[in-house]
Image (tube, rainbow, N blue to C red; front, top):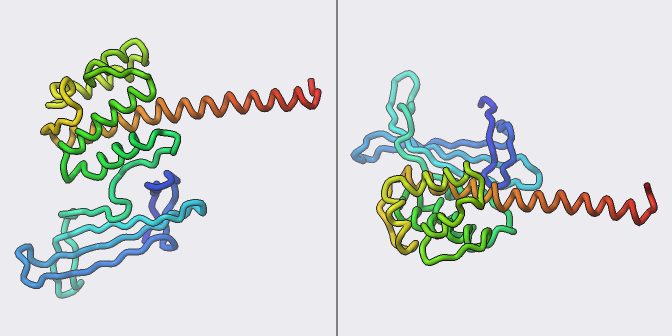
Length: 230
């Protein structure tokens, strides 16, 4: 196999994958099914990061054909794909982000393709949880909480939140109960998840990194003072 670049969905470690941490198995079958000859490819990747070593497991279903000279061969692009481990594309976020927020985000990612409207409902609840926890804004409606953010956050972030809430059916239903299941397109559910990821990174992670950096400066200064260093 040719080496390829890959990022671990568990630890975000970027790596070059070779045969030492990759395996693949193909199973062809027909048995009279209405699709004809099919090929099921299962691929396993083990993270090379010594502190992770998690494995990813994916299956791809292809239409196939039988040829006299080459035996079975795949045709075109996969007609179906399953991420068996991890089960979704949810990014790993640190434990200092409140558990209920992470739970809603991870579940929204998990069911995005299966039920976009349920995913969007969880994302709206996650968005409200972020605003209430991080900014201390709590009102009866999510749209009022979002409006109250204006002037408190940078213009680019506000524009992104405002843009997402205005697409499809999402905007209209932000004026109602956040637990109301709304009918949205898969792309809309994906946009909401993307917004959640940006806010978690730009607010929680950035604040934590800043606090850690400032604390390290204070610790260095105190250590020098304790030793009498100039």
